[in-house]
Length: 141
Image 1 (cartoon, rainbow, N blue to C red):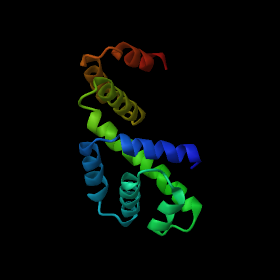
Image 2: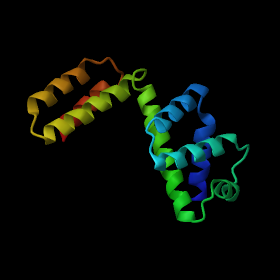
Image 3: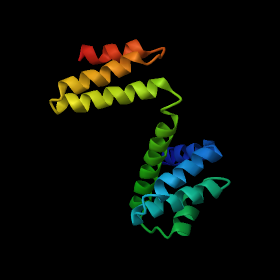
């Protein structure tokens, strides 16, 4: 991950509210997998830092290879965005509509056309300012 990407991750972590951080810890800590512990340790370490210092973070976590550290940061960034998407999906109707459209694509690819149409009708019924853009984007493809 380039320096600017490290800064992106650091600023994303610093922008999280207490409830966002709690939800992330529950999401990652609840899986119980060993590989997720490094993400949680990296998250906590970056959250406690006043300013970004990659070398100090790598030393604190005991990471020797730069590629391992870059992969951990990339996956952490992705996991944080995933948790934020889940948290915001009920508040933002456009996220929910996009999720319905994604589900419809999956069902359509599986040959479950009627189920895909049902999901699309749910997407149409949501009130959103840009729903016509999303719905019409499906029918153009």
